Amino acid sequence: MRSRTPDRLCAEAVDLARTAAEEAAAPGTVGEHVDAVADGDRVVTHLFECKEPGYRGWRWAVTVARASRAKHVTLDESVLLPGPDALLAPEWVPWSERLRPGDMGPGDLLPTEAEDLRLEQGAGGAGSAGTGVLPGVTEVADAEDAEVEAGSPAAQPETTARGSIAAVAEELGMGRPRVLSRYGLHAAADRWEEEYGPKTAMAQAAPANCVSCGFLVPLAGSLRQAFGICANEFGPADGHVVSLGYGCGGHSEAAVMPRPPRPAPPVIDETVVDAFALRPDRSGGSVEESGPAEEFGHS
Image 1: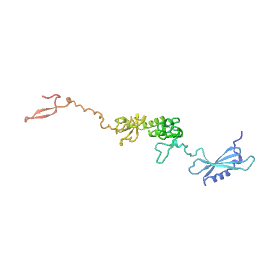
Image 2: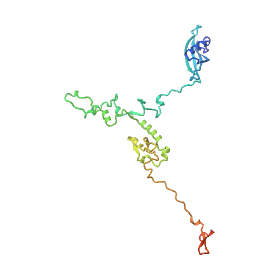
Image 3: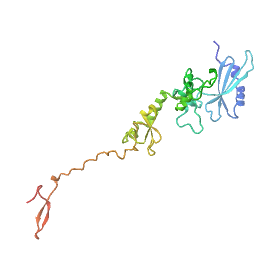
Image 4: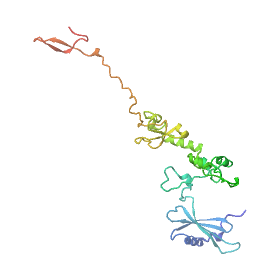
């Protein structure tokens, strides 16, 4: 086993290594000699402190070597490397994982991967090369709409634009190459229900749910069973997709809903009210006694 003890001549070539580091670094940024590490037989890397701002803990690494039985040390390479306590940039994360809702601005483009789980092939993307024509059904789709011309059947046009599957899908509003997959549908529903769902504080304090609100605009397709769009400009979810179980104080029937019952007025027990006796006056009238009389009358 070969020894990893630094070669003596290479380890002593500190000045050669410093000169190489100073040539590669900015003036005055090469610090003290830190260590000499053996990389192999007659190969040593000298480490110097880096004093350049922004590179705290980094070190200039200069590798020197010499040939077998040679006494002349030569320069191999010099590079700036991070040390054990170096200040490093955060680990690089792909843009697709860094992107957050609301990050896109005017003019920004967000390419969608071909294998995006949120999407699946639609009617407009059927067939090969994005033509929208399914193999084997072109003849069936064109049978009624083909324009028959005089002459040999071989001279007839192959495919008409009107009879193609892509044209029919476009006419029916189904010409999108890709549509939402079941996974994409459920992911969107989870997001919408978390923001405007029945478990939110606003819905918990609402007088009624959106399912009975006149400002609710139902969605199309299967999502109409659970979601709609709020059209109340004064509501907190105006223009947003809301769960049918969501609700707010801007419900269309909030003003005509029965008010909560008021507590009954207090009951006054008149049997314990003090009564005051009247005594005759000298002038023939009557004057109240200064003290209460008996509970049910006086003599």
